[in-house]
Image (cartoon, rainbow, N blue to C red; front, top):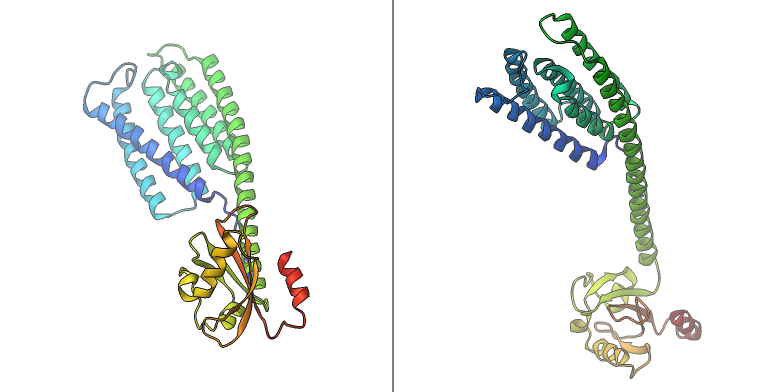
Length: 317
């Protein structure tokens, strides 16, 4: 019985796995950059201007966790959706601490959070992107509150923190909408590919069960398809796939050349190459007006002699 292929729906799919790998490599490169700046002992302003020791500690921890996240991704130690959420939360925690150590919202670290939320929204399902935006907003507001409580530092910038939080939610909204459309398109493409594969299998089964011999030849007369009836009519034990039919059947070669040049009709009685019997051979182009492929019908002339007019009409159609 012919088995049909059923499309398997994956939460992320191949494109999601590739995107997650690039997201993880981006984080690893960012953490490496911060670590190099710390080791160079020459942090450019405003990096670490308020708390350089805290900045260095967070840079080392961020790099170590980023390496572990990359290893977990390559070994598939956890579900991909959980890894995306974990990596976005890691970015929120690390970047917020970088922000606190570097002068607050004005340091520009909020842009890194926008990037993480945007990518997280593209790689996650449901409304997890809004959850990440909420966590990031709370983290930024908490950071500004801590700065306000620290009497040695300047006043907190709640207005900028609020605008940054609004940007987080706007980014999550756009990312969530794009991700939904991408997953819908990917699922539709997978279903269409499955339908085409099932249709190809069905057509192959129909061709194999036909009483008429059917061969499909390419432009060089190499056999691309040959059903069981053609094997029997031509007296072959094995299919001639990939081989030139004209090498095994010289009489067919002469007929094919005459038909191709327009000097002979498409249908003609030929002697089977290995059987002492005549077969009715009919040629047709796979595409109208093109000789890139040829469809060959082979009929048992002795068996179909009474019904030859009907057979000829069917072959012509």
